[in-house]
Length: 330
Image: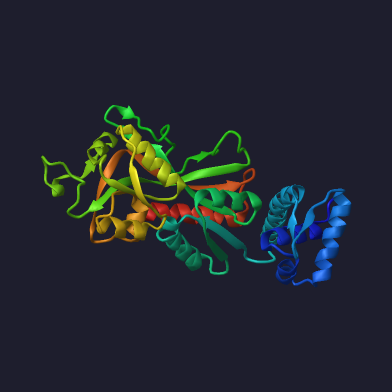
């Protein structure tokens, strides 16, 4: 059986890039780190590190083992924390990863509720886009991952659109993917997606004044086929491409940023149009932009947990608090 301490050393070397940095992070002496690595190679019968100039680097086998070891150690740490909660040794440490617009709106409300009702609970927050948040969850570095996904909304003749099948509503417990049976998710809220344009910009037709336009359908985006666009994170960029494809054109993307404040500033300056969800506009609203709801699509905000039910008490508490915050701030 592989020694957990030596696995921690390998993970530290992979994460920090050198024996010296790993020793500093672990508060070990440098020869001790080298010794653990040598013993781990002997245990596995595999070359895990190799010289690279004055330093070292992991072999392919070393990188593979370090990746798996990171997941194992994360789960062990999570198990230790959960056991301490069950045993009453401490009030509990809760770790949440969430994307920026949720961290600016939903999460502060939930954190304030948690502080008022359970002041002894230690809540730790990490900003992460959905793919990274899920990796952190699987590795045991967080207890709950807040992610988002774009869904098809009901169109004039029923659920349709390029974003995928209609999703379950808030409060529904589902599995993210048949191949990811170890993850469970619950939809906390669903929010509209908006076309963002300058106040005096092109988000209206020639036949109607801007103030009279409150919503549009993906097909209406065709009128903006000649405009420049501002894309966000990978998932948001994919959503933009799908919506524009439904309108029959490929957007000319001039800028890419996952900072929703920067997106609005760029739009306000007349440098392009963008798609933004409701939470991003609630978090910060630039007076130089106007938002028109894009019908036929929406964004779901989802809380994801790891493992079989029931959730540990601390995790269940965090989920209930997030759900309450979502209900109080629709």
